[in-house]
Length: 328
Image (cartoon, rainbow, N blue to C red):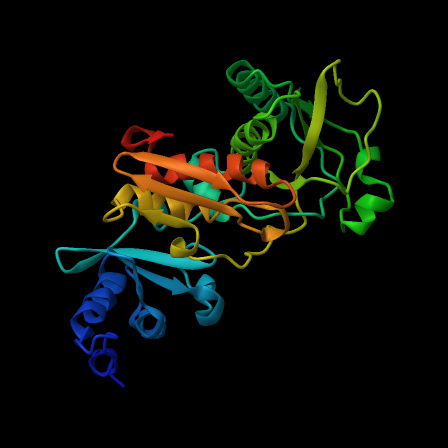
């Protein structure tokens, strides 16, 4: 069946036809992405069935957990694709640009790392090269200068993930991790989340995998230093994973955000980027509110939600662009 005739049968909830939108979408998939028609047709047919608008922002959302989109030759977000309609033609959001990646691609941007990075719990018995370790240590030092935290990179230390709790958490082969430490203060957890995620995404661009760990590890005396008045908040396992991890379920933009008036384009991009952020137990208990050119971010209640807020805020900045707004 011709894909356009399929689209003609589809209607908006209001009853208005939207076949022209998906016909253009189909052309966009074939033309801009150079995708074969045999691939684009089922891809867009599924998109047409599941497309919807997020508030007043002209974005279409497609859930690829049902359409197997992650098996296509396109480089797409593992759980959803967002396309923006500009002048009647769908245009892919810049943070979801097609790209082929190699492990350890030093040219991978942080935005791209944000899309491909997943939690990995099983690691290979493979040491991290000295140049990569040095790059991470330099980044740790810079994060500490900016945040006044006491983050430390621990290498070749397998004991923290060799106990009952680590096995309960299904960890194996972990011998490198980042200890997130800082002076006890009300904002400590959020800062650890924000700067820890900076290191996580950097590690991804260096070809490493990672996993945030809140409870299922052992505290090893002498592996790192916790000074008087400081607290070890949590650690991040890093190394070469046996796999690249799996995508997880996610909430929608509308479930975690609101805007006073029409949501700005940069705001929707920022919230969607935040939905890529890892959270404890996949809770995603954060909420963003746009008021003009300001954004308020709130944490819900639950385990490590303040850490999660820091992670989500860093993702939001990557997606929205720090130049477009200010936090309140």
